[in-house]
Image (cartoon, rainbow, N blue to C red; front, side):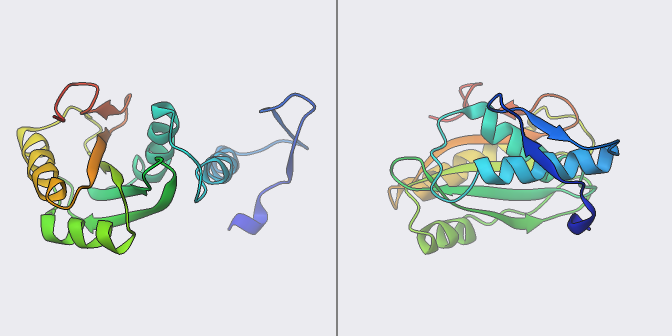
Length: 168
């Protein structure tokens, strides 16, 4: 479907784009995904938490089932890869620390940003969200991999467990 997107080009002002003609909401979303994927390419440094929240919101907010994903980063916080590891139901997904550690080691990651969506739209973390974050932090600490954040996506502003002080 991406081949149907109307062409858009950068304007003379950096960060602004021009489109010829009328565009639909779906075309705008596709263009936004394209722009974010360019900004989120392998090797890009993740220095702006807003960028990761925007990227993860576009990836996860529309899903009707829970998905647990990870952004794998090198020791300079540059993107190695993004993967959706676990898929659940409308109200939960099983997350296995062993598999998280295996994927992180596979990518030779030094740090991670964890994320999952709440299909209900409510981004408030549950106690089990906090518990699995601590469990993953313990497992990853054993192999010297840091969790930089765990972001929960809903229909409102994403919630960062790092900003809430839940990562220590």
